[in-house]
Every structure is written in structure tokens, then in C-alpha cells.
Image 1 (tube, helix red, strand yellow):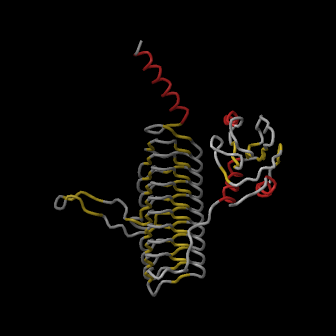
Image 2 (cartoon, rainbow, N blue to C red):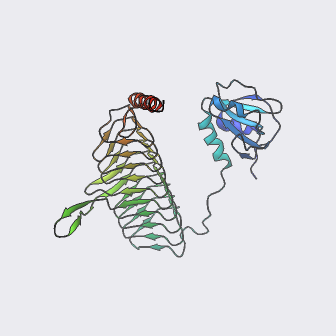
Image 3 (tube, rainbow, N blue to C red):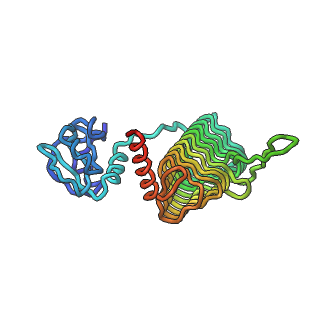
Length: 332
């Protein structure tokens, strides 16, 4: 079992210790569930009220906290408790699944594939012709990587993921279980003789460095050219990214959100959970789309949009307030 003193933990996060405790810390936990040997955190002043009833001996807190830690308890004050807690979670993280052999005997690897030094390939994987896998890549069991794909160094691909032909994934990426990279885009056209005719999707997907793709997420290949995800994008579980969409750097998409085809996101765009974006829409740098919103037109940089159809946040709040009053008046 891992165990750290408060001083050892503070060496990692470089905060200021207030109060003192002799208790060694063996795990992390939320305030309501923590025991005396666990560390928790207070990332917002509204949670200060939970500290007194908590059994945690130590909490990582923001600098603006207004309460005292109490007897044999301590706070580690930092500028950003959420970021500091991410460092502490890494301290206590259990080891990842073991590889007893770098390449499992049941993996099927085409003779033309290139596997970089230190890369590991689990049981039941398929690596197709002319695939290039860089150094220190980890591919967990039952992953499929088809012809002519490239995978950058230090990337991790979890079980069940499929990377279809000619797609390219950068360095230091994480692809979570059952994600699909490069499936056909949704392209059909009416035809009197055949009903619906499938439009061939002959492009690919290009994913930058430091990108994380959540479980069961689909990133469709381009009809022509590429669907592109810029460096540092973080995509949640169950997200749909349509063909020929282009994401700038450090975009965030929360669960169940979706982009139709040929959507363009600038840098640092945030898409809330279950939001949907119409095809051929452009969303500017730093814009935010609230959860459950439906975007049907372009959004300028820096704007926050809410509602269905989405409008500027302040206008949406005014509309909701008016509706609430109208409903109230109708009940009188």
C-alpha cells in the first residue's frame, strides 16, 4: 500500500501547509466518504461546509478558503485545487495492466508493419499491412489497426478500439475502449432506381499530439481529404465527430455531443454534453456551447451559446425568464 506524509505530498504540489497532522495518507477520496488516512480536496468555497463532518485528515484547498483545518488536521493551500489534486491522484494511481511479453503470441502482425522499440501489443490484436507504430506505444488486447495507419510514440490504445485504414494518430494520445477512428462518414443520396445511394468515403482521419478519445466515440473519415483533430483535444465518451470536421487545438467535447459533417471548431472551443452542431457550421476560438444546445449557425469567437436553437447565453436566460413568468401567469 502506498503511504505518504503530508510533507511528501506537498513536495509534489508545492503548496503551503496550514495546520498539522501526524496521519500518513494512503488514498484519495471525496470529502463525505474520506477516512482519517485519506486526503480530499475543496475546489470551491461552497463545499467548505462539508469539512467539519468529514473524517479526512488533509485537504487540498484553494487559497481563498476561509475555514480552519482543526485539531490534527491540515490544509495544503494551492492556487488551483483541481490541478493539484490531479497530481496527487497520479501519486496513488494503481499500476496499469501488465504485459508479460512485449508482443503477445496471439497478435497478428503483417510482415510489412513496422513496430517501434519498446512498443507492446496485447493478445488478439490485428496490425495490418504497412502500419507504422512508433516507440513506446501500448496497444491493449483486441485492438484492430488496419492498413497504412501510423501511430505516434507513447500513444496508448485500449481494448476494442478500431483504427481503420490510412488514419494517423499522433504522439502521447490515449484512445479508450471501443472507440472507432475512421469509420465511413454518413453519406447517402436519393436515387429513383435504388432508393438511397451510398457516397464513397475515401478520406481519412488525422489526430494530433496529446489527444484523448473517450470510450465508444466515433470519429468518421472524410468523404475526401481528412477529418482533423488538433493537438491537445479532449473528447469524452459517446461522442460523434462527423466526416470532414476540423477541430483546432485544445477543444473539449463532453459526452453524447456531436458534430455533423464539415463542422469547423477553432482553438479552445468547448462543447457541452448532448449538444449538437449542424453541418458546415464554424465555431470561433474560445466559444462555449452549453449542454443540450443545438447550434444551427456560425458562432463568433469567444461567445457562449445556450438553448435549442442556441442563442447567446444572456439572450437565452432572458427568454427562459420570460417563459417562466408566462407559465406562472397562466396558472393564476
